[in-house]
Each structure stands twice: as C-alpha cells, then as structure tokens.
Image (cartoon, rainbow, N blue to C red):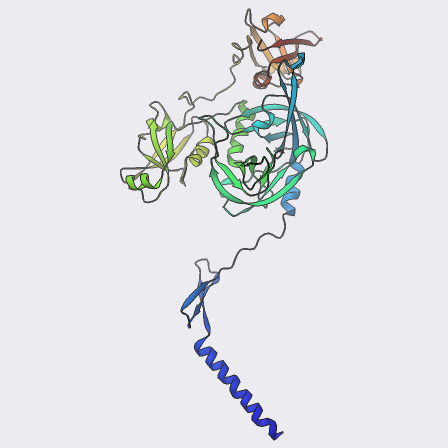
Amino acid sequence: MRKYLPIFLACLISSFLSVFLFSRFFSANRVVWSSEAGDVRYTGLVDKLFNTRTTRHFMSSAPTNFIDAAEIATPAVVNIRAIVQSGAGLWGGNVSGSSGSGVILSPDGFIVTNHHVIDRSSDIKVTLSDKREYKASLVGSDPSTDIALLKIEASELPFVMFGNSDSLRVGEWVLAVGNPFNLESTVTAGIISAKGRNINILGGGASIESFIQTDAAVNPGNSGGALVNTEGELIGINTAIITESGSYEGYSFAVPSNLVQKIIGDLREFGVVQRAFLGVAIEDVDNDRARELGLPKTEGVFVTRVNAEGGAAEAGLHDGDVILGINEVRLKSTPELQEMVGRYRPGQQLTVEYWRQGKTYKTRVTLKDSRNSTAVVRVEGDELKDEIGIEIRDLNKEEQKTLRMPGAMVTSVKRESIVYQTHMQPGFLITRVNGNRVNNASETIDAIRRAYNSVVIDGYYDGEPDLYSYRFKKRE
C-alpha cells in the first residue's frame, strides 16, 4: 500500500496543477445578456489568450414537416385545360390547348387562376383533386395582373382561406401547390427569397408586377396554383419562372394574395377591374439621387411627372417629390407603390408621405381611373357595337323571374354589320357563346372577344321554346 501512495499523491498534485493552469490561461468566459423581450441569449465566447470573440446565435428551427399545410391546400388546387381555336375555327381551323392550375376560393365554385392560362380560350374544363370534371365559365380576367376568375356549378367544395401577404418575411417557409397535366396535386417547399420583384413579363404601362419570389420548385403546368404559408393560407398565385432551359432553375414568382383579393373582388362584382391611379410617372431612387435630394436613406419613389388632372396634382404633389410611404407603409421601389395603389378603387383616398426640399410632408390623395374619373366602371353594353354590330345589357329583375335563365339581352343590331347578316333581332336572349354558358353582359362581351374568329351564339326569344343559333366570323 505504501508503495502506491507516492504515485497517488503525484497524480493528485498534477490534476490540481492542470486545473489551475487551464483556468488561469485558457478558460473562456461566456457573456450573457437579456433582450428587451426578456429572453436570454449567448452572444459570444471571449478567449483571454487570443483576445477574440466568436459570435454564436440560437437559430430558429425549421418546421419538421409541412403535412398540415399540404393537407389543407391540395384538395383545393385544380387542373385547368383551356381549348384555343385559331384560324377559321369551326370551319377547319386549328385547335390547340393550354394547361395550368387553379385554386378554389369558395365552396360554391369560384376559382382563381392566371390570365395567360385561359387567354383566348373557347372552352375551359376543370378537374378537381378527386377527379371530378366540370365545365367552367369565365367571370372575368385582368391581363395587367395576370389574374382570372372562373366559376363552376358545384357545391360543398374544399377551398383555401386568404392569408396576409404583407406579413410575409424573407426567409419564411412556403409551399407551392399545383395540379399540372392531371398528375394530381404536386407540393414543393421553399422560402421567400424576395418581395416586390418586377421581372417585366406582363408588358403594358398599366401592368402591376410586384411578385413574391421563392425558391420553391414551380414548373410549366403549375401556373395559377397556390403559394401557401405553413398554416395552409393562400399568400400568392404562382405565375412565372425565370429559366434558360424551359424548366425550373431556382426562381419562381407569385402574385401577392392581397392584390389577388382585390382583383377577384372587382371581377366578381363588376366583371371588370376598377383600376385606380395616383396620377404620377415614377422611377426608383438610386444612391446618387438620394444624395442629391438629401434623403437620409436610399428609399422611396421619385416622381418624374404629375398628371395635370390626376389625384396627385389635386393633392399638391409636384415633379421632383419623393413618395416615401402610403398609409404609413414605407416604400422602397416602384413595384411596391404600384401594388399598394392597385389594391384600391377610384374614389378611395390614400395618405401619401413625401419628401420635398429636405422636409417630410403628408397629404390625402383621391385616386382616379385612367380617364381621371372617380366613377365606378361598369359594362355599358355597347362595347361590341363597332366590332360586330350589337348592343346588349343585363336582364332586369322582372326578366330574370319570367325567363328563368341567365344571359344577356340584345337591345339593338346595327344595320349592315356582321351580326345583321345573320338576321339576329333585338330581344334575343344570349345564353351561350361557342358552347360556353354566359350569365350576364360582361361574360358575353368577354366570351365574344376571346373567340379568335368564328363565333356561335345560342339563345332564345321570349315566348318561343325553340333554341336559335347564329354563326358568324369576326374577321374575314
């Protein structure tokens, strides 16, 4: 026993010496601070020997799965097939088709999709996730935002609820849900890469491009599908990808849900979009301009021109002002401003914060339409007078009761016009255009205009049980 005692003492002394030397020269002190919210975080390790700090952060954990969100969204995403006639149509023309996706918004069959999915189509078919097929009617379409609203005659359908696209944050998880080529629903996951993106695909000076950019995989056939958050709420309509190969390469873009809500609300209520304008020409603020104007930050939208009779001019805005925010929401780019204004109708007011000569001001702007009017735009019925020679209107309440069918009433036929040659008479109730049911004047006008050349109009005369059909070509 005694012979082991020196060894034990030597080991003990060595241990104490090692602990002392490590604590004296190599130990790292943890610096802890408490945030204003009361949570405690480790902010770093201070190394005494090298006098350096290694930053550490607690990263928020990613969701372990997206099952709940997918189960909510997938039943409400449908496949859309649109038939497009070209050439001479029914008299030997070419027939082609396009395919995309759509999202059910209500249990009674309203469906949102992209305008480019159904553009110029003569027949639209919708296939639900459970394989049921329906013929869809077009309620209305808006090329400036690439949004269209369809309606199928069904009930108790699964649908998705709208989420708030303004609350999205870069880095947030999202799901892209589509129903391409009748492959049933496809679900991909990604994150929000950016907001307010303009990729110049819609064309036209009145287009609104303020896309949500994600890295969720979106391929052809997914256009019109749903972009949802992890709660299964609709926060965008998938619209486009940037690609060299024609397939997904990492960039996909969606129309924000807050803008979609406004567009489909207008289409459902009026048949056309009630588009509002500030009455200014604008461009982004760069670093040089911010320095020149004395802006504290490189942000806002520079006003290059104010329309004389527009809402901005009446509110006191001038050329050279910088619009910093709308309704207390700060702006960084022209797409953000266009999206914000695009959510309102003519006649509504906005609070505009702007920068002028080193000071910040606020004013109230009454929005107007492209004609500098605050009136609500409705279908007047004479939109087809110059094209094919007829004027139409919606049915009044008495006619709806007696006729017991939806449609549009022909009020006049212009002499020597295209339709006049068919012997159609005023008082004719239009119920179908190229086989598609129409419920009102707005749908009738849109269906005739979307027909490439050949048009077949079916309907009835009051008091006569026989179905009448009139065929004509819009262009010779």
